[in-house]
Amino acid sequence: MIALNSVTKKFGTFTAVDNITYRIEKGEYFALLGPNGAGKTTVVRMLLDFIKPTSGSITIDGIPVSNPEARKRVGYLAEHHMIPSHLSGLAYLRRHASLIGLAGKDALMEVDRLLEVVSMQGREKEKSSAYSKGMKQRIGLAATLLGQPKLLILDEPVTGLDPIGIRDVRKILESLRDNGVTVFLNSHLLSEVEKTCRTLAIMNNGKILVKDSIRSIIEDDETLEDVFIKYIQKPRLSGSTFKVPG
Image 1 (cartoon, rainbow, N blue to C red):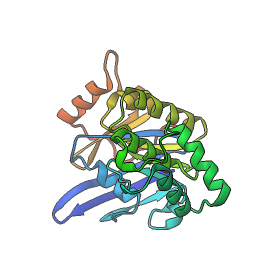
Image 2 (cartoon, helix red, strand yellow; image 1 turned 90 degrees about the horizontal axis):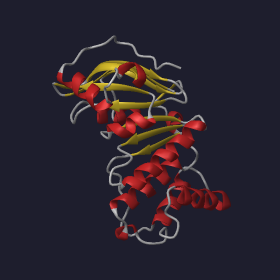
Image 3 (cartoon, rainbow, N blue to C red; image 1 turned 120 degrees about the horizontal axis):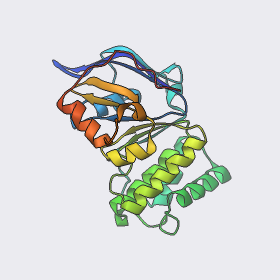
Image 4 (cartoon, helix red, strand yellow; image 1 turned 60 degrees about the vertical axis):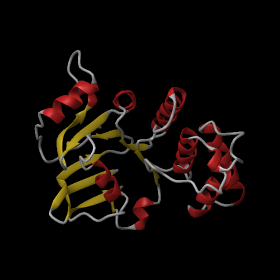
């Protein structure tokens, strides 16, 4: 579903992403981990063609990301997504539906379904200025799921959510996994990554330090947090090519 081949991104003399290569299979739940400034957000921005790599290539489902066709079945949730304060959650979702080509009864039914999925029915007609951060995050997730995307790119999807909200998002992701949706997750909440994802890469200073299945990376009596700290404090570069196990 996702393939990065020898991808480097420089901003002037600064190298944000340094010659990384990996592949994520269809239906995979993958997490990209790393401390602040590791290069994770730069990778996400290149996946979405917000910025161009300095060198290398990126494809989604075999299509170069520079081609709009590559992003037609992609849902993206930004860490700091914004909802205009004058719009209600309902109006926001209907506007998103129209942007992706949903109209009429189909759009209304899809929006209603997703409001129920994210537990926002009954609050959808309120202006977003009255929403808490967690409520805005729920509406943002609903917008991400419009059109039944085959690939989700989620940047800190549980930001601002209480424990119940975090549990709800986990259940949503589990149901999507059963339907073959691919998820690319960028998160600092390691406990949720461990519960949700099957494979991961740990990144620092623009380089991939390790990339494998979570089961292979975590040794006896270790947590994912232990592994994360170990690789960040003592970085060990692995091979240049990564193919997520099927």
